[in-house]
Image (cartoon, rainbow, N blue to C red):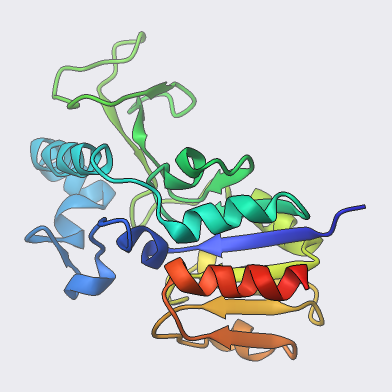
Length: 230
């Protein structure tokens, strides 16, 4: 039976494809503060600004491609069961060819009803005020904003419990609850942390079989692929 590799990815892997991040710009993204474009309060106060911000992000996403880090994870599927838990809202893992991807924070190329969360639609064009679901409610980005519950967290924790090997790629491990996923993993499994500027949180420090690969995802993931494949 193939071993299960669970992978947690963050903004760093997408940044190498050209997607800008909050972390790299001191909490300001395209001249906007997080509080102004990525919270329920922002949506209530200025929905037009929020829609414009995500329209720009969606348009940018359609112009970029997966990088070597994404493709290396696909290669792992030849020998392992690979399940990716991503904090990113892009679809670069899927476009690279990964077959099991769980999105913790939603997806940029989807929208959902503001009144009925289960009404979710694929979306590649601009989203405007007046665009409504079939029940008449305004559509919003299918993004888990700061301050909102993370509905896929239980499924992610279950995957972490099942991991035989754990990879952490391109995340500062500072944003909870995602940063706490390691507490669900078995303590003695191999853990590989790939990041050019690794930051060890409490959960990661407690893992005895931790290997740190101080490198960007584009080169660091391939190093881990070579290690786990022997």
